[in-house]
Structure formats: structure tokens, C-alpha cells
Image 1 (cartoon, rainbow, N blue to C red):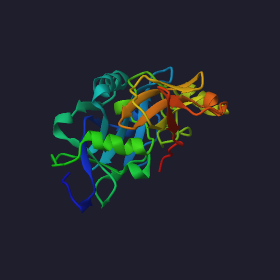
Image 2 (cartoon, rainbow, N blue to C red):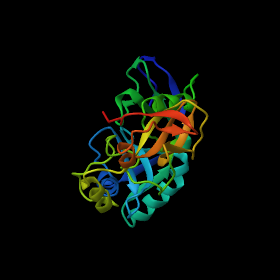
Image 3 (cartoon, rainbow, N blue to C red):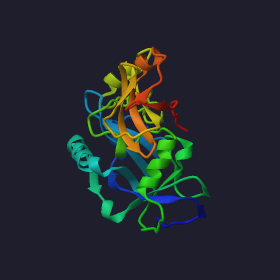
Image 4 (cartoon, one colour):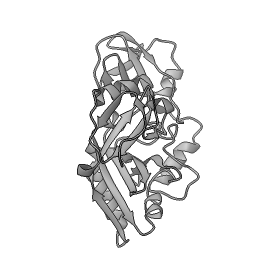
Length: 267
């Protein structure tokens, strides 16, 4: 997969584990495990615990060379182990090919490189290639860009088996297909979906003072959330939406006002 087309946008290499999944009926095998249907060339999805929490979220790339999964490196070994456990005697080959491929994010510009991130159109494109490209941008630059859109990303915002898909807005970011066949953790996820209101979700925040991950977001004397990740004056927080809806107080972090962004939605 060679780099082609016109690229007039920032590009940053992201630190991802790349996994090749190949074999007989490979899409059926993978589709029976994950939260989304494999109907597109790029799919955002996750593998869950039986209790419905995210073991690893990842993107599935359909390419001429086969199916490739790209996930945060901190999830790589766990995802590999789980996939190999579930394949049993199936004729499926699961291989870590991180050393052979590179994943880039491109945003805020013009070009026909890669595939549009299904979570949010303004996130830009994701480009999987076996070419090592030069770039003046960093993963931190990309992090700042996605924080400006209020889109959660597990690379920075949460660890394995900590949150439900709805907590991380996967259902609002094209990461869950409730109409597909069964997947691991589906019963819990579907039950949460049928609720009239989800009590907590991750939201982007604009900060006006010093803050760090783990700091509480307050509305008067009531804790309404906690910061998961901070970069400069932007962050992602897990917000108790039910408590936020009941207060007229201005949210604060360390006694400084904070603005909670509206929800971001998928493409």
C-alpha cells in the first residue's frame, strides 16, 4: 500500500498495534465477536467483556491484502490473546504485524489519502500503509485536534475493562450496531440502550484554570464528573448527565469555570 494522492493537511503517525486477521470465513468469525457490522472499508468497533465493558476498541481496515485491526498499543496484547482464545479450532490466522505497517491520521485539509474516520467527519482520515512517511506533526497534535471536537479516544481517555460503550459514546460515534447478530456483551449493551436516559457519558470540556486527569468537576457542592484526560485547556471528562441536568450552578474544576461541550456524533 503506497502513499498516493494529493495531501495538503497535517499528518501524524499514531502509536498503534496492527493485527492481521485472515482465514476461512474471517468476517463471520470477527463479526460474531465485535460490537459493529463489517459493512464498510473502515469500521470502528470494540471487543467487550461478557459484562459489557470495553476490552479494546479498534478500527477494522478492509484492504486488498485482507483485514487489519488497529488498536492502541496498550490494548494490543490483550486483544490478541482474546481473539486467539475465541478462535478455538477455527482456521483463522491472527498475527501481530505492527513491525510491517504504520497508521497515520490526517486532518484539517484537502486530500484523497486514507479513509474517513467514521466517528466524526472532522476527525479526518486514517491511513494504514507499509510505507514509513515523514511528518512534522505528532500524536499530541492529533490529540489536541480531536479534543477540540469533544470525541473520546481510548488512547488517552480510558483503559481496558473500565467503561461501557455508552460511557465512551461508542453508540453515538458509529461504533455499535444494535441490529446486527449477537456479540459478546450484547445483552448488557442492549439493555443500557433501551433505557430512556443514559446517566453518564464522556464529554469534551474547555478549561479556564490548571487541571489534571482525576480532578473532580463540581457544580456547587455536587460532584458531576471527573477529568479523564487534559491537554492545555481542553480535556475529556466522564460526566453524570443526570446531575448536570438538575443543577443551575456553573461547573468548575479547582474552583475555575469549565464549559462542558455538546455531544459529538458520528459521520
